[in-house]
Length: 432
Image (cartoon, rainbow, N blue to C red; front, top):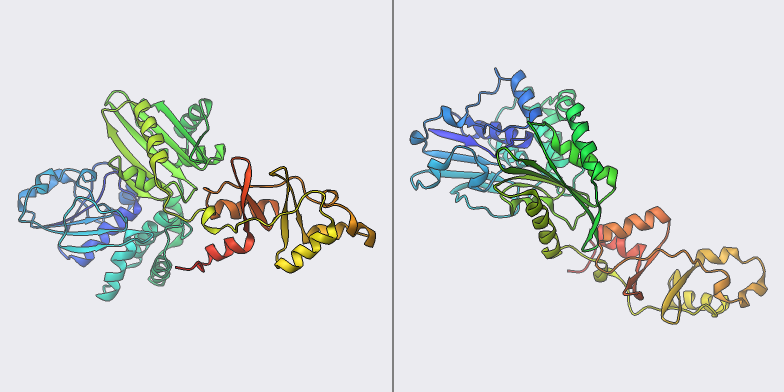
């Protein structure tokens, strides 16, 4: 017997990948965990005659000879398969788009970083020229869109976009996709969000704005991920975490959302036995109080090594600057000979202003070229820390319509980041 399975709290990418694997392995049984996301459960209830699924207790595990795992790479994320973990006579295939390596040994499959696992399976389905029905294509597109945020998440790859086009060619129904991916938000969710906001606190962790909310839950509440997303957006923080404590069963459901490329939620959750993606993830933690979970989140963020490019990698230095008493005539000479468009103005080692070519528009008389720069410089100067990311620098430049950011550390300017520097980064033109 062959079975295909996936992780607890099955989302659309997991369901889509499970069903796609049954096309690659004809005759394999789709075995889903008991815990399934509400929108996935609603989809299956309508399509139960199209997609045949089993629960772990409905399968004789002693008869299993091949196991196909999709969208997961750790045994602890699977449901009811403990009897298979110690068996050496089982052939295991693993299909997963998470970059980290788990503890499931596999003889086949594909583990590659893409926006969604269904993209990897579609690659093989196309190679084998498998026929995909419009209903199957619609399910696969649900999985692809959910895990890539409609192809907008940073983890999205070009192949994900090609896969979406391929599914639309196969008559995937965008109306159905929109219906089932629309998050449920009702009275229970509003109540939880209100309680979270009542005790909301922001803190700075390694330069990032983070909020962690811990609340007790009584009874089951669907769509908590929607609540955490809204919580993050309302507080306008870089990352938000909801620790939902079920005292009766002594367990915590941890859900995280991040808009910062430096806080990888999926990586944090995988270290807690869960999983996810850079912007979203969750983990179920048993036998731990919520205070300990919150402290662990802070410790992991503080201890995380930033692998991405930082401002300090892009900025120009040493800094060419002028004093407030420098004449506009001298500034014009500096800008022309240095081939730059702006300069910081420094007094007693402190940044007091910026002067740019744009400021020369304020000059109406030739005699004003002899005036000191302090008469024309901009004094409301936006700065940035050397440890921040290029994305954050770009946001500041766009928000304030500026072309350069002084890089300040311990009150002193140590470099300049220009609009050109950030464009080099975003268009991948940095030298190897």
